[in-house]
Amino acid sequence: MIKFENGLVKISGKGIDILSEYAVITHEIKEMFVKDGGEEKEIKEQLRHSFEHGLMNEEELDKEIKEKFKQADAIIPIISLLEEMLKTFGAKDKEN
Image 1 (tube, rainbow, N blue to C red):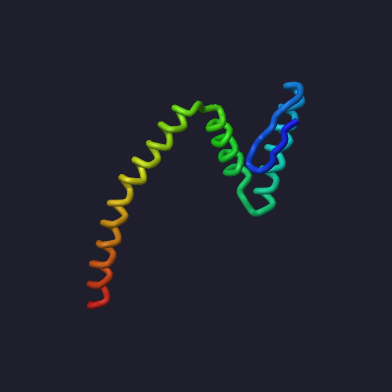
Image 2: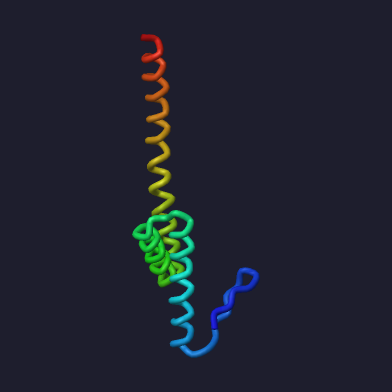
């Protein structure tokens, strides 16, 4: 049995029963997102991504989070530069 309550998860029972419930939960999540207009292929990829994260230990998760922050930190200056370029060129276009 898989039970969710107040942000906590309790799992008990035979392995095959737990895996069956897990499969049903995954299927229902996919169907919910498809019903809400999501692309099935993208939703499946997101579910696979979530599954892979669920298999990671804390060190692996911390490493991935740090990598994502490094990527974001690298992107922010580029976005700022693009904004400045748009302001500069946008102002010149308006003058012409």
